[in-house]
Image (cartoon, rainbow, N blue to C red; front, top):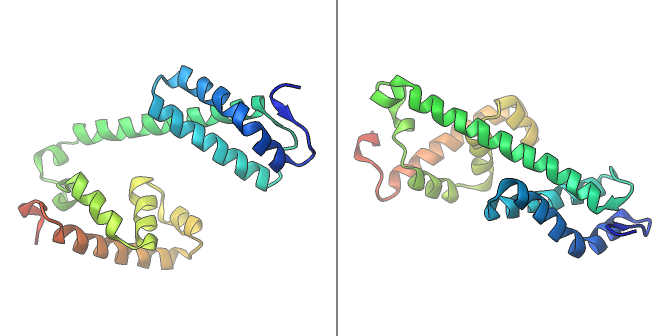
Length: 182
């Protein structure tokens, strides 16, 4: 049967199917999103998801059709993320307190994105993970605690330390806007 492997071991089947299936999955995704970089990212997510499913023994038979089904879900997830991001950008653009600079915490609004990314890269993995989950992925503290395997109280303390560490690194970066510094 084309597009399926049946050795009885889903891990071996996925590995054997990969070379044939990757072109089909990539083609499926590219035809729907029309962006090579996105298609590559989603295709990688498909195979990471497939490996995870195989490891957890969620799948019985590994087929190209099963991988295409995962691709469909990963592509929908991508579009939902893009829509949420677009709504956030529109909300920020429409918020007069942000546009006028009269917001509660102007420091957050005035962050230079590249400097902020550099600062985030200089943090330890535990601080970077906590900040990314909380502020970029917009998870509530309880969800961040769950992902990190910590209590809510420990996660709140970690976020306080991570924000403090981020601010110190950010403010020491060259090119930090003068009005942001205390």
